[in-house]
Image (cartoon, rainbow, N blue to C red; front, side, top):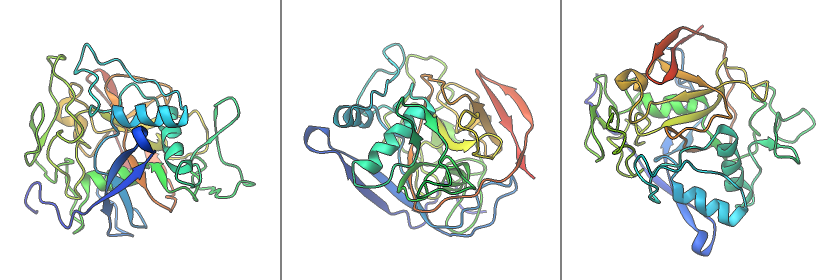
Length: 306
């Protein structure tokens, strides 16, 4: 067992988007150790090196992308919670809106959209006649650079480490993080904030880092994963994986590596946000076995892959 909160060779890569007053940057950390084995839950094996957003997507990023690209993404009014500060996590964004934001990151930089929408804005599966089609993951175009992280990509960045050790919590520790309202101390996270008027922290101030160097994959806000909850990305309206817990739901169990919440991709809630990953490869989903656990205000599941 390694020291809690230790980060091995965490290198930040900054990528820029937009222009002028609508410019912003996203920091990524590299998730290496390709072709790693899964942990005991059956998750986290990724065959390639990729980059994970170091922080959650902020409200300012969405506002600037909306202004530059006319995306029309709506954000939750957080006046009654933590406020609507520019560096607060972007909440109230459903899965499809997160996908449209990611698409804009790709197309505004001359790349291929990751997710397919028809002329009326309805999400579609990629088909065998589309360049970049992959039968193993019909949600994601394999030619896209920026994506919503798959469950395995998200899981590895959260609970894995460059030296192959797996942790129970996304702070490089097998011990539950200390609950805080903000800060960057080792093995801390923004959760158990039941006062509701002091809730999310700024994305740069939301707890200790994972072993790979990401922040707030546990606590602050739940995060959309790309993957369908049954592990097969073959129907457009399937329930999606939601992971990591938030400031006030589920306590330490919500952040545990064994816990995931199935959620309707249309849902918009003040406790749900997302982060961006960067990869040029497509993961292959696996079959899952499910075990329900009722907890908090969100239905959460603890599951193990078969």
